[in-house]
Image (cartoon, rainbow, N blue to C red; front, side, top):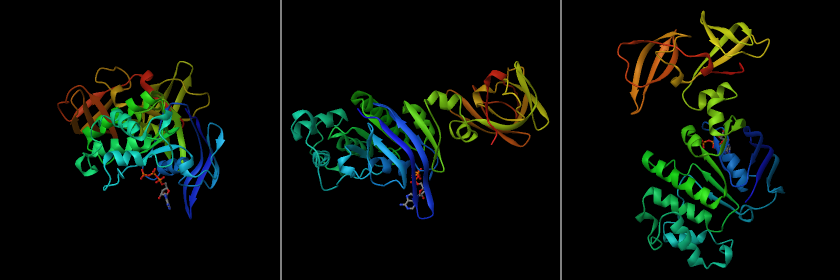
Length: 345
Ligand code: ATP
């Protein structure tokens, strides 16, 4: 069990600032995800934790132990990358045992016992003699996971391990990874650009943007109470508007967007502007306040629900309804308690 702490970690490559003063704490046994758009610094953070990159400033600590100058092979971390990176000329068993080149198997087990144990863990029992090209993409990635776990690492680092797989395989591997992580109780840092995946698997996640951490929290908190406009727009569908405050007291505020007034929860005293966020599911045909008229543009049938993209006063609006709307106009409303407000930028 290991706690990981990053303090003021920055990393620059020539003119590119990849990380700027990143502070993060990953707790013992936690499944912690770094999520954000391409180029925001997720992989650089992971590589810095693994020791493949030295930070330009700041410190990385495992259980309080400073890692500066500690080589990757001495950090006892298991890493799984985007590409399977299995050795094609080695069997599955040989690939897994390669994970033990720097360390003996734990608890006095033999190498063969350890390989069998790991193949069972990743549901590949009896496949040790196969060569990687006789496995599916999902199976290859499970071998890579077994190899990373072979020396019983203190930390497991996963860099977009599913990005080469199709949607169905991704979901099944994601569940397997979550099960294995919780079975082993191993502190895990997982990198993905897929916010839905991040919400689904993580104990907590950090949303990153331009080399910085924008918000850290549990999935539900990140989804329901994003602290910035960026997080509100990046995580899940959202309708986000800048509004001017017309009145505000402890019972609630009235704000104006494009000359139309809306009732929202009370704002901090003295607020003049507010950024108002309304999730698609909060917009309903039956709500009797905060009514708007949406011009329907496209609908996507999702099975349980229908996602509708439309426009209100030229602004893009997303709705989530139970059935496909008829007609090309839709009147919907939202109640003040379904509004989340973030500070204006
Ligand atoms: P992606 O999701 O596309 O993999 P990311 O969030 O993992 O992106 P990083 O790969 O960490 O982002 O890159 C962060 C920034 O640092 C980017 O602007 C990238 O171009 C830059 N960068 C990363 N590695 C290097 C390098 N070796 N040399 C120069 N710039 C680099």
